[in-house]
Each structure stands twice: as structure tokens, then as C-alpha cells.
Image (tube, rainbow, N blue to C red; front, side):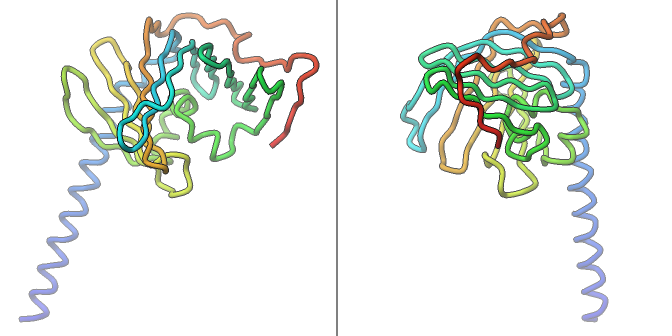
Amino acid sequence: MKLKLSISTLALLWGFVIALNSHAADDLARLQQRLEGVKTLQGNFTQVLRDDDGTVLEESQGRFALERPGKFYWHTLEPFEQMLVSDQKYLWLYDPDLEQVTQRAYDQEQVRATPAAILSDDLQGLSDNFAVRHQGEDNGRTLFTLTPRTHDDMFNELTLAFTDQGLVEIHVHDNLGQQTVFALLNVRRNQSVDQKLFQFVPPKGVDVLVD
């Protein structure tokens, strides 16, 4: 009897695992369907950082451009200028106030875990690096949550919000309990992007740090 019970229990557990895997595959397929037709995105953004109590710590705004695979331009204009640029080979982080540029190889894990890199990555990269969960509908938006498969990423969870017009918001929950919300505005998809945006040249006189 115990043996039969054990076999029955294992069968139930195995069926549950298969169901979970099937559900996860469906969620990934839904997200891929949302993203696979997007070759380029460009527009403006606002960014709001809140602590774990919901208090606003910082607000900023700027403009962005993304092109698959691996190219992005993220330029914060206010209140403090900062620029993040990738050509799929290197990533540059430029801080004009510090007169400093940090250069990193694009394939470093801390680079590929940034929201801009995730959105510009190929769809296989999403499947390899993140568990995808379809959260359903909320106020006319379709939500997908991405959870890193490793525990050393810069965030615990990232949520993408879509409407019929495409991606409209990105919610990032970091390891400190803080949440950053990026709202994408005036978005243009699949239009030609100036390739010079992805070709960063350090200004004269700035310090270049290779990480």
C-alpha cells in the first residue's frame, strides 16, 4: 500500500510539474508574441524611484532609442544628465557632471540585466535568463513579470505593461526593496533610428574607466 501511495504521489507531482512547465511556456510565448514584431523603439521617458514605503526619492526624464539585437541609447536629461549607450559590443555610461565615462563589455551579466538591455535583447535571451509570468489584465494593460534565473542580478523582478499601442511602462523592483517605474511616452516603433545614437565617442577631457 505504501508503495502504491508513493507511486501515485509521484505521478501527481510529475503531472503538476508538467502543467507548470506548460503554463510557463505559454506565458513566454505570449510575451514573445508582444515583442517579436518590434525591431526598434524610440521616444521619451519619465522615471520615478520610490523606496519600500512608497516615498518618491527621485524623478527624472529623457529620451531613448532601442534596436534589436543589443543596441540602445538611454539619455537622462533632467534633473541630472546621464547617458547609457550600447552598440552590442560595449556599453558606455557617461556622467557629464563627473566628466567620467565607464566602459564595459556588453556581455557582462550586470550589463545584460539592465532594462534597456533586456528590451533590446533577442527573444532567446529572455527565455535563457528570465522566468516569465503572465499576470493578466490591469486597467486595460497586459502585465508580464520577469524574474532573473540567477540571484546576483541588480533587480528581483521586472514587470512590463502593454496596451494595444505596445509597451507603455516598465516596473523594476531592486534588491533594496525600491521600485523604479519607467513610463514610455511618444513611442515610435519600427521606424528608422539614427545609428549615430549607438556610437558613443568620449568627449575630450573626460576620464575613461574600463570595467
